[in-house]
Image 1 (cartoon, rainbow, N blue to C red):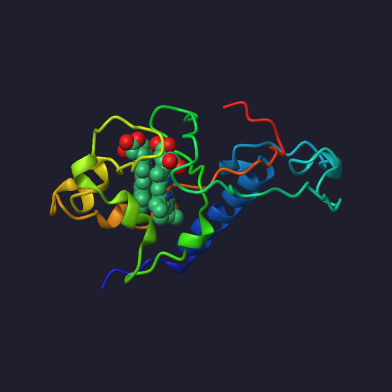
Image 2 (cartoon, rainbow, N blue to C red):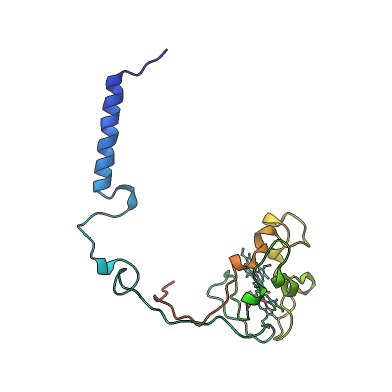
Length: 164
Ligand code: HEC
Ligand code: HEC
């Protein structure tokens, strides 16, 4: 049977440990270099660092009823649109019950031009099983839990300016 001599194991072990230590000192795979301690005020996204207890202003979720809200302009082309109407009363979404679908599962209305106050169908890519290869009339499993992608719009002020 082939045996690795003990001396070799010891040498390889020492070599790996050295690489590890050098790696840590230079910041290694983490993509930063250690240039001394970091001031606590420059850690975190707030102006005062992470040790302050910020009290952001409270905010409300929409109180506009369905059929009365205005659609919100998307931040970018492929973004899931935000929901401008009341939201929590239709939650939770469970295996047996999805109230969102009672209004939005309207395959016949897909591509109909939106008219304010009328029903709004979710788009065709919400159907057809995972990857669109399943039943075209059924909501795809990947789109069943609407709240994964659609969030209610609130009047919350951003804590940090968005530069995206
Ligand atoms: C009682 C019917 C009804 C229910 C229930 C309902 N919606 Fe809506 N939804 C609407 C209508 C109507 C609109 C169009 C805007 C309006 O008229 O308020 C809309 C708009 C939207 C939009 C905006 C689409 C866009 O392009 O701007 C999204 C997203 C949405 N709803 C998701 C949801 C989700 C998620 C749920 C469940 C938490 C839900 N809706 C429950 C009727 C409903
Ligand atoms: C995986 C993310 C995702 C999930 C989950 C999802 N959606 Fe969407 N939804 C989108 C995206 C992205 C769009 C915009 C692009 C498009 O039309 O597909 C959209 C568009 C919509 C629209 C507007 C359609 C239009 O004509 O402009 C409605 C209404 C909607 N979704 C409702 C729902 C409802 C209700 C559910 C749950 C049954 C749901 N969505 C689940 C991502 C998602």
